[in-house]
Image 1 (tube, rainbow, N blue to C red):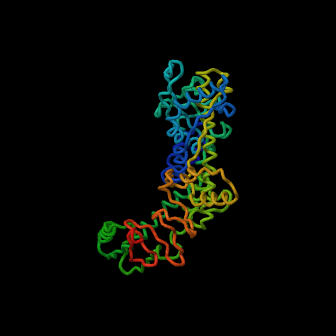
Image 2 (image 1 turned 120 degrees about the horizontal axis):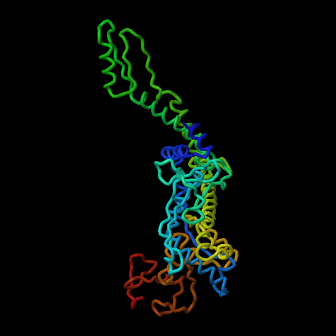
Length: 437
């Protein structure tokens, strides 16, 4: 089935091939795909004018227009980016994904298009015809197709293809790299389940007298009704040796190894583990796990940049072209910046800040540092936790608590402020009133 579906996909008809990809989510790289999609859908998306026009002090006509275009685009596409990023991920897994867009003419300020619908068109809807042009199926259960080019030109469709169509459809998506280990894992799951079915429950052995008519059938039915797949009905006097495979060394080991190899393959393809080094998450030191996490973050950031470029060229630039003209689309089109949210290590941040402060750096933003460490910033100094300060004795110094001169610590222990009076340090249970102090 896989070979037949791949042959059709190579010929431009990937519907069955993509159905295999959809099935892989069930017991294949589904968890890895979900992690990657969540990292994108939780990203922060900003629409910025071209870099040379981002200075708010620049009040030239082009700079003002560039910032104006960025604001209009943000209002139309910003609220839809979370769902759009999660849908866009199908380009990476399947190799192609489309977006259907519906706009209301002059719906914004009476002169710009208002985007009312932006929805995903699944990969299985798209094909390549005999003229090597993209077509799509308007209806899921109908074989009729329509060309994509007119709809893309009109702005009602955006099509994102891995490799810009330079790779055949059977090899375009990342799932292509997972399909072989997924096949082995499916085989291993099936046979490991069969092994558990046969040997996980003790055997049922029923003996029958073959000289008596009908006793064999009764023995078979009785064994079947005992609720185990591992059963046998044997004539009396026959020697039968039953071994429980699960008690032997290495029982199920082959199947478990195949499943583990498949899981590591999914991690390598989607999360980057073991690409730069032989990293296996959860099986090594903390350094190895940190290295694997950093590889995954690097890949998430690269995919976020790719998504931003796709949305800029496939959605934003055509929108600017239709509403502001070709010159604005060429020179003033906003940039789509997709920033992955990362959980910051407060301990590392604090250690880095301490080292920089010791080195003489004085430009560290105290509030940002505290918030990045996951703490609540307290701007009121009277409520904030302060560093411990060594109290040095000075002759004749006035105590702010009592208004009296400070005593020599060698003769009198320090007087510690206490609600309702003062506690003498040398007498832990003795208290003095303010007058007595």
